[in-house]
Length: 127
Image (cartoon, rainbow, N blue to C red; front, side, top):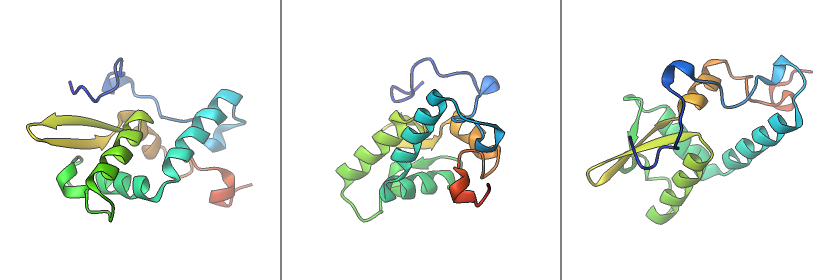
């Protein structure tokens, strides 16, 4: 297990989406806070670009060497990837000199639930 992977991560067979489906009913205050924190992390264009590069990588995971060309310094890329890991959106594994990133299982579960799962009604056009 990677030292970058969050401790106490649930096994893949018991993955729970990172946030409740927005169309599933009224959010609790705790759910709203958690979703707002996720949206805050995703509101950064560099983080969103890095996340999309990892998510769309053909191998299901991406080496930092393959995704780092986003128009900012290497230190900034590292910092932004750290923020995505801390938010529980990415997990990482060091292999020799490189770090490989993949979507966190909880984020994959939310993504599999469909595009409206974690998107406010204002963004989906739903009422």
